[in-house]
Image (cartoon, rainbow, N blue to C red):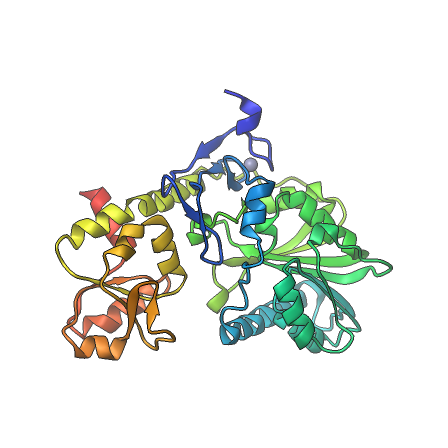
Length: 392
Ligand SMILES: [Zn+2]
């Protein structure tokens, strides 16, 4: 086999493993849309970089980012709360790195989306020059309407952004780098936007842990600290700090980078354990459909939740959704989801409740399980069912 084709694109190691394929024909992108392609990922056992066995081609990327890709406009209130959380945690990290009196007078955000974080930070830091760069025409139109006077919103991909005469103090991006076709090409665009003593802040899913971010087809890269450091070095940036985010942003990591050569080597900690954890995680997803159908064989059940986890179930374990009687949520916004009714928890419990399958992430599961324990309604989590089946 061609060793080069198998090698890690970031560190060049050929110690790379294929992860399981969660569904043989389909996968999902971050906004919930289905992709008619299986998800075949690899994990580098040396630096921990996660990547597609066959990177999406130009046509795939056009399919992903067509006009309907409007993540960030789905729920205005949630988007606003996330912007506040990102803003305060970014300020905290910069205080740690630059000292309490740091000042940022010019700010550019790549992938500025709805513009809420850009607006928040521009006010918080009292910036003079504020630029958002966003490829989605719908988001550009939306953010131009909301933006403070003087804010410039450019409609283009980061790699095509021309900073003109401005050398920015700070180039920020949140959940963009993992989508870039070339991580080092993207990071070079960040590098080119800032002054020689400027700062680049990159936030993306924390690839040090195996989480559902692995299941999004449009995540081209899963970064560990080591693989980010190597990709940044390729782009002329050195990693000066990194921190896992907390609270509602747990599962994300922030990297602070500065122009210049990195001194020293990336720690050569082998990431074989991470490759195994990713393999187990995606292997569970591959088993969910069969495991759930076995447990509920001949029995009616409902799905608790209509969010991202329900989207993932619909993509990777479609029969689990097809055979459910209805969805249950605390405060339904819509009466139905697809062809299934959406019922309020209170009304559901007031009737003759059937068992529930929890469509929530690992973080929310213990609390939800506890909540239903006192109601006498059986509730199961797909991960537990998939793991039980393996053990037996
Ligand atoms: Zn590697």
